[in-house]
Image (cartoon, rainbow, N blue to C red; front, top):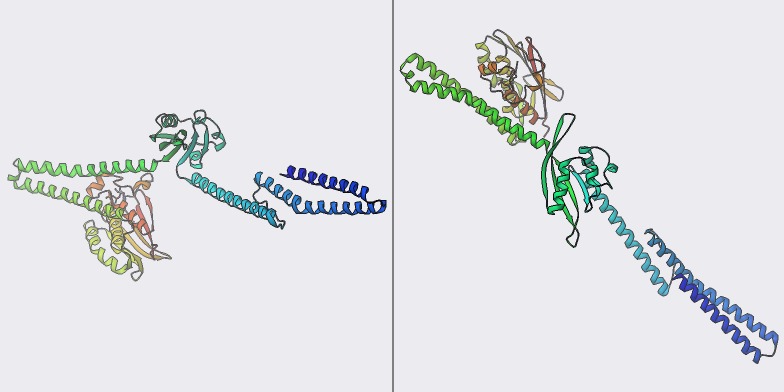
Length: 458
Ligand code: ADP
């Protein structure tokens, strides 16, 4: 465009110059006076220069400016604009170039925002992501993938997947995705520092607009937590079955013996019926505890928060505890801020007290002592149950809140324990956003301290 203009300008100049010479020649033949001839020529020359200057200012300069701006736009500088005021068709052209530049710059901003959003999603995805082209070169790996398989993005991007990805299962997934051109899913595990991580990999083919395979995207999910939950669920079912098996076998055995004729002997009948009664009580206790646990887990937020007055709460549970303690001649010392009021689910807090106090009585030899404290401790209510019992060994302490964990299985069964008491306590403390601590020394005793926020955290 610029060249064309320059050519035009030279053309116009030559044309005007030619007119100047021609008019000079005509004048020469008509005007005899040399001075007049020279004056006319000078005037014509000045007019010619002014005409050229006007032409340059009006057309060449604006078009030069427009061409310069277009060059900048072509180079990707979408902030370039024509600032010169122009009229007519050149003015219209510059307005159009400016609005084109504005549109381009808006488009680039939008594109940048979209690219940033996409890369934020990819980078912050909780699944590992890998993008591979149809030739097998890796184009994208995200942060999660790096955290799963190590190295840096530079170690993967631009390389063939089978050269840099060590895991065989990933190779299979890529090959199958390319081969079958459809979603492929596999499970596998990796180990690092003796820690096993379970992964699920999904390979998805990518097609272009002509439906030709363009590459594949691999999505890798960490399913370790689900696996552990599955193991826990299986263990739980196995434990419940095991817990039920002993009393049911016993009930069945004694009922059969009674049916076989033992019912005729009054002494044996009474003894066997008592055993059947005790075993069925054990089953009932277990089922009661299982129901408490399942209700707690069903809807964790379903707690009935109300103002609880310590004095009234203790009055309700004390007769039960006193009865159990008296059987073993255990002294129960209570030190409580009776007027203290806090916000909690009263029935559930009573359950905590009952479970901790029952345990304290169960695991304290006859004539021992139990100390119950319910005290204001700043933002919390502190419930402390201390006994002078058998204590818990250091290695067992971290496990006592697990379901069905018992330090001494036989002793727990003899005391009618289900192995779920402390699991229930811990759960109730958690739904109240509280905390539970335990200190113990073998042969000396155990202290459980529960902290429940005085004001509900919900
Ligand atoms: P259990 O029904 O067997 O008492 P828990 O869940 O209440 O089950 O307690 C788990 C285990 O923790 C018990 O089997 C027992 O070994 C130990 N334990 C709990 N409380 C005490 C305590 N006060 N003194 C000694 N051991 C305790």
